[in-house]
Length: 277
Image 1 (spheres, rainbow, N blue to C red):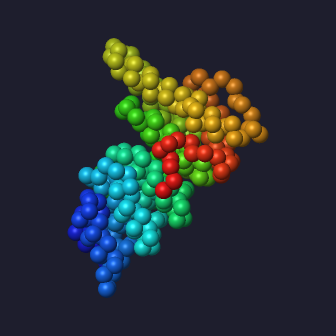
Image 2: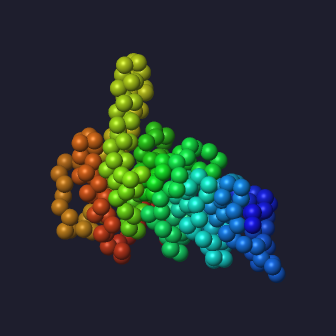
Image 3: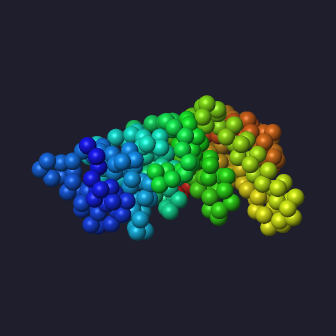
């Protein structure tokens, strides 16, 4: 059956009235199907996550209440919409509230979401989700946070990537049919080209912004988050100087990332944003 428009709308808004509509929908005498989809293949769970838990909500607990309720009612966490993206993929793109996104990621993984689920089709950015290539995973879309010079994106990317790797995300075949190394190299190449084009055009401010974007990927491996994880892995060899171009050393950096999967499951959170669901 097709998801009713009022339920689809309520899943996006997420306020008290919307929460009541969704609860009534699933708790009435003849409850609805929690996995019904709208005309774009979105379940109520997917719609709510894409809306950051609710368009007008601020408190992260309020944002999470519908996600938790739908999961408790048996929502399928691996249903992809017509753009080929799963709820977990969308959670890793939550930009209105990264705290919500990370908490949603934890909730989804705790109930068995496929951490390495690959997008089933390529898509341009639209109302059903972000731009993506065929075969992307939540990890590769999290790496995409490092592509942009928007303030806060590097911190967001670090939080999502750290969380996914600590929960066992694969670095192999996560970007189309290519590993994370290829994704990282592509990110840096685009940034370097941006610097060169800006230099030729004499755009000083653009040069500075693009240069910062190039440096960002190098800086993340020297961050306290990654160093803290590394300290939990005494068997992993230190990999020398960290401050050089990523392009010729992408494999080395991904080596660091790969080690994160072996971090102790009892280690503390890598970031205050990655609190338990």
